[in-house]
Amino acid sequence: MAVFRYSMQNVLDVKLKLEDQAKTAFSQAQMRVNEAEDELNHTINRREGYEELKRRLMTERLDVLKLNQCQDAIESLKYQELQQKKKLAALNAVLDNARRRLNEAIIDRKTHEKLKENEFEEFKIELNNQEKKEIDELVSFTHNQEGEEDE
Image 1 (cartoon, rainbow, N blue to C red):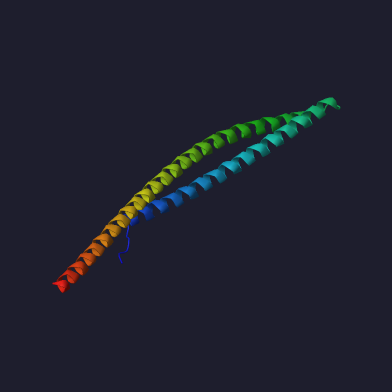
Image 2 (image 1 turned 90 degrees about the horizontal axis):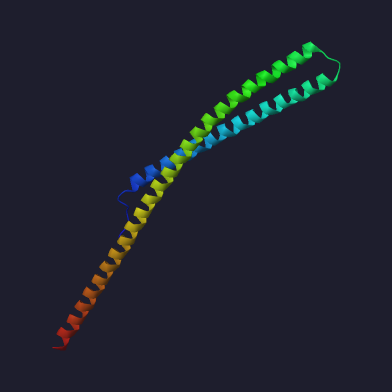
């Protein structure tokens, strides 16, 4: 019995490894984006807390030192927010690039799997034709043998 061997199996194996690497890169990029978003949300919450504190300080007896410290903290957190948003934008660009590479790797793998599938179908057809040929030869041989015995 013939055994099917895909002629480009090594290429398919490489495509599978590249897809796995792309999946890993994508998940790592996604994790970094999530961490950056969490950090940004934390910074925003801290800034809002200081803004609330500033509003409270303004309604109470005026303490200029505390008010200035609170304003400085707000400005510092606004700067951190801006920096974090820039970092998040850069990480999103990396994530988009990783997503694009992953999609390309998936398409490459699927293409090679389809080629393998097509080659396997051709193999089955060829095997079937071979079996038909052998059966025809056997029937022809058996028929010729019977014809010779009748004479």
